[in-house]
Amino acid sequence: MSHKLRAGTPVRDRSAGSRWIDLMSGTAVRRAVLAGGLCLPWALAAEAAEPAGSVNPAKIRRLEIKAAELDESRAIREARAASEVPRLDAGIAGSENFTVLAPVGSHLADRVLEQAEAHRQELALIWLGEELPAGQEFTHIHVRVKPGADSGRVLLCGPERQLPGHHRMWLDTSEQLALTATLKHELAHVMLNARFPGGMPAWVNEGIASMYDDAPPRLRRKQILAEYVARSKFPQIAELLDRRQLPAGDESGYAVAVSLTELLLARGSRETLLQFTGDGMRNGWQAALQKHYAIQNVASLQREWEASLSSRTARQETSTRTR
Ligand SMILES: [Zn+2]
Image (cartoon, rainbow, N blue to C red; front, side, top):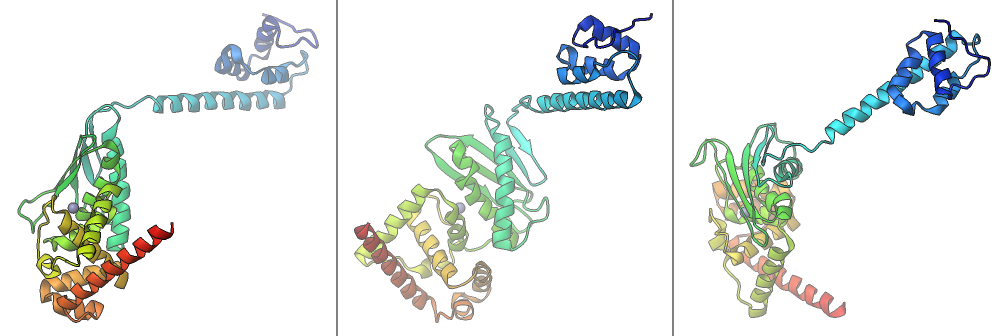
């Protein structure tokens, strides 16, 4: 075969181009043509359009590099396209910290897992001051999507609990809340279990977790507290302090728990609150109040709590009137 190109023959003439490729007998341009198919960029083709006899090794090298780049960019495009193929939504997802079961249809299990990992990290840093080791407080999360409902439960398990093994969590709520407030509330209980593996008083456990609640329950609690102030009739904190359970429907109990937790957090750090909790469980609330908050006893705490609610309600009324 002896194809010769006339000087100045443009490579965009396909027959001339293929003859030119034969002439070069190299792999570079052939690879470029294969990589680009019929879409071989004309910029490359134009660069290849050399009169016969003037092809030099440096130009061939440049063409080889461009051809390799073409191959590489196509390989990257293909890999990206392959990764964008929707993964099978099996309704189950897992990591070293969680398993998640959720209805199929919107990759909810994957999304809940992703959020659970993010909340776990954030809550551990905030409340424990450091990240939890991988695998600690392992939790099985079961999501049942119920638009309009919002219920979360967690059964904490372990050597110091009634049941051994991993924690179990059930979220019966909307997709949105299963990713955000309700998931975060229940995960706060899980994180606090790392500090109090044998359990802790319900008021502070729920007081902390409920700080992550959605707006409607927070608004209900605010209304309950405003009613106490309006009637000048308050529940007794002493009755709440040692309770190990707060039933989900006990909205008054939750309202008091959250406002008491907020009061103590306004007077000291999160770590102080947790130390106070541990001391209160071991040595009684009076000694713990004196040690951590310079409050004389539970009756003084009661008076301080009532006063803080009254002044807060008064401030809210003022700001509402002036708005
Ligand atoms: Zn809770």
